[in-house]
Length: 404
Image 1 (tube, rainbow, N blue to C red):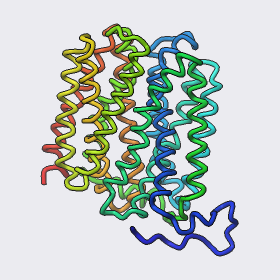
Image 2: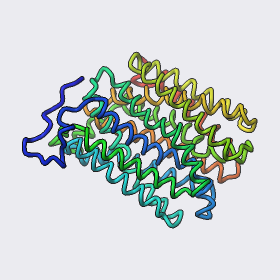
Image 3: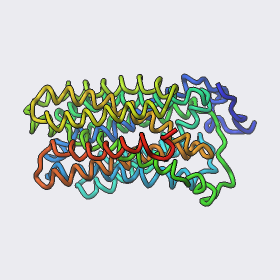
Image 4: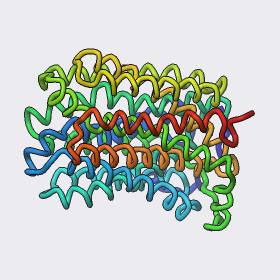
């Protein structure tokens, strides 16, 4: 466990820093982060589970709802670096609580969205705090647990996201069929509020970096090694966005599964992601680059299988579950490598990692919406994602920062 800076001034009001946050216990700190990550996973990944009900409720099309998923991811891409640079001097506890508050508020607004246009704008705003929240949580988690266990910290936060995939996304899909997608997002709001309260109770005060300017932070974003790492995360992770965003119509409309069967399949997909998070976290602490290579090879293989078998029913399910596991192995090791590449500003590096992951969602989901809108069907996004994964495969074997 790494020693933290002094918790607070002696006269800090208790409502700002309760006693439980003065001597932080790593497990309790990470619990708050995991619940917040679970809420974020519900908000982002759950969008794929409620897509069919949104199409009916808002009288629109699947590809149009796909753009609302893109809007959320664009919010993350923009918000993560801008907030982390603009608010670099903020105490990390204060930043975490502020971002959680924004997340809860925008989740509540999502429930009230009257049209697709309003939903597009609200989902963009909802994405803004995502990267700064998870990036700061990763940074504080590493301080609490120790830098030598950063892989396990990333994996622990991923458990919140993968728990959303196992329980939350199928649950939101089922709830949207029973009570409507707005009720599903009301649940997201409640979980986000629980995460906010846990962080208020247990997260310690951690100093920001006063005196940091846009120029000094931008200095951490220079070099071919860093931008190769960002590009690798983006193109390698795009496969998940391209496939997961349209997984429900792929299963229901293309493969003929019932909505009840889809709920079970979504749970299996989430279990695959959870297994990948568990394996990836441990392998990453041994060798991030080697783990990244193994992960992206698996991603490319499963996308190829999905493209070839995309209309055959249960073989599609097997390919999806394996894809979820391989994507998690790749993404965690890629995040660790990216944080290493921004060693002069680790909290910014963690936020940039989430920005890159969501840039991947923009690319994958956006291209998926294009090919679906062109009438090429719900299997076509897998072929687009495969092309991007092959680019990442080349980068992890021959790009700057990967060759040694």
